[in-house]
Image (spheres, rainbow, N blue to C red):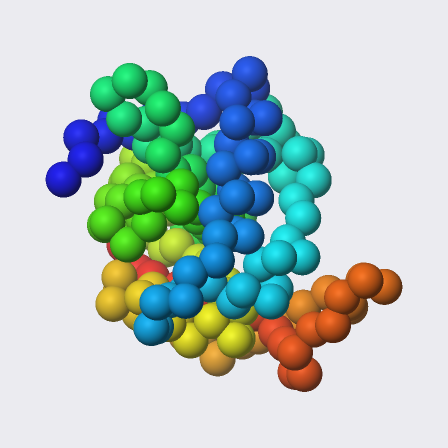
Length: 174
């Protein structure tokens, strides 16, 4: 098992985190039951503001997992939404370390961080409706579908999206 240390990211790391997230979300892997949607992943683009804003916000953070040489291995964005609810977003693991348990370890750290930092007792997230294996993974991590869905953005001019694409909302009681 890879020895990792977990911590909140700092502003100078935003560019490295941005590269990690884009790379992880675009990673192609044809293994059975892989969590990526390759057609959507290839068109994934993220504005750097999605990384810098939570780093600079007292009700947000980007948490990172680094190896013993301080190489960035994984990241996740967290934000306090209400007095009792925090959300996670953009959980990303370097493609060379995916399917090794690092995502689960970072998710556990994110939940602990939110509970200890903001005193929340619930975590929320959403996952694309087409990513059934990812939804099952979050279910195994204790998240449950709330029954709510959020529409996905309209397609850009240069992309075709699956029909009826939406986000499945999930929550976990801490």
